[in-house]
Image 1: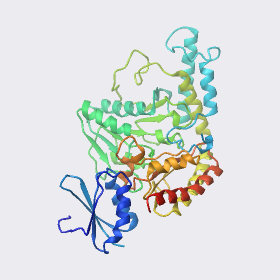
Image 2 (image 1 turned 180 degrees about the vertical axis):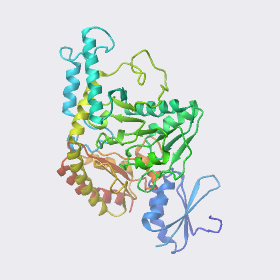
Image 3 (image 1 turned 60 degrees about the vertical axis):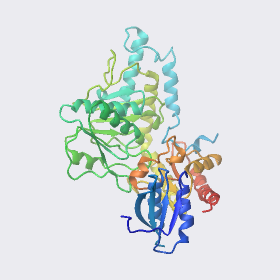
Image 4 (image 1 turned 45 degrees about the horizontal axis):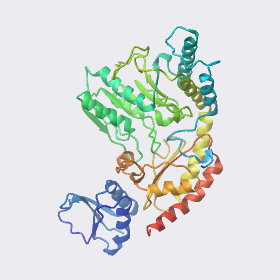
Length: 81
Length: 377
């Protein structure tokens, strides 16, 4: 689902505990234009449900996830607002 | 220590009802109670203890609207869950060995399922839930051995559509974990076995109730002993069972009035929470336990939220990973697709007053704002 997506911004949130990855995403998403994609790499188990929930609550698009080279999940978010 | 009325965690354990305490103390008293004696012996203190235990069983049966021979006292709600689920599975194991349970069951059901996979050589299927936490019964289901669905969810309070679950699985024995309800609602119509927990209705901790419907195939899943009730091995805690029964009678007599009051409190708190930006209210809007409000605050650390509310005198629980012993977020919130961080669960007890709820509603907006300011949100 993410083959064609090139992130405009990559956030490395490895080692960060909940809710820090979501806070980082929220604080930095305005750096990319509407329509661009932010990639969040996070190994906290709460990141998966909480990034999806953040997208739903804030009206952003959750594109799904891939894995970084070290296997850590990378969540892809398209800025809509 | 905060005043008892600001202990808003009856969902974890409710303070002992004063009338239950009286029953407990009286039963321990050698003069009047003899609750210490072995109900199986033949001397007078033993006969007295037997009478107390029978009275406790009869009172529980009457309060729940079940038969006395369907009631077994266990050492905890969790023990009742394990015995209920696994005893039903063992009873049906010649026809099927598959257990179906919902994605939002208490951890004790998940643990029983894992045990059954290891020791019963069987499979488990998990039923999904919708955004409100309600189980979605399958349109067409294979016939499993047992279906386990809670009466209501302990974390978000959603009451499960057990009639629809029973209809979807027709003749399959249904195990109902009723622990979280704390006898605030009558038992559901359909159950082959059920588990309850006394410290959720103002009884003492260390008393669970296992119900097995008459005529249900149930077999002891664990080693037992020579005592009378095969459903529960070991010496009964007679004084605690009596106190549990006393508290249950009080709860059942007062539950409608209590539910009315707690619904008003919950609505008040939910209205307050709706005014705070980026707060998600969990659970079904109507089909929920009256005394429980669960919510998650975006950008807020669950542990910080609990600590800050505690500092201001309010004791609440949290299902966020940062507050749990495990790093995993709440499986209930995950299954619902809900926000898992910044979670708090407020549960009212009979001691909770309108003033306490107003006081909590007054501090919540500033506590959330303050915690967000700490992380630049």
